[in-house]
Image 1 (cartoon, one colour):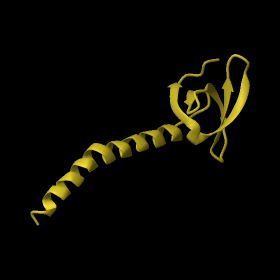
Image 2 (spheres, helix red, strand yellow):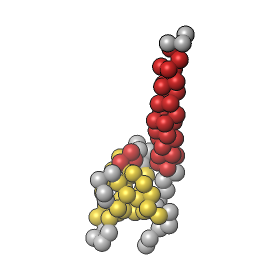
Image 3 (cartoon, one colour):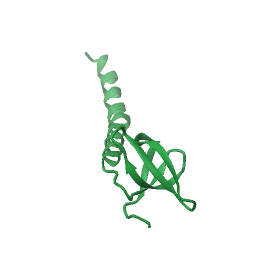
Length: 89
């Protein structure tokens, strides 16, 4: 039992320092993706900033990119963060 104690302690430290923050970040990202709405200004994983025009049922998002107003279709999972919650029209 004494030989397994350092191994169990090491596993506990890894869990607290690595796995718990990863789970918290995953939960935060999932909540952000579920709360997307039309008019939100978002940043994609590719670095494109655009305004959400519509959200389809099959988890695709259509973004309008300024200044030309081009509309691009992305997977919902490609959204990395919400830049602003207000519509910028």
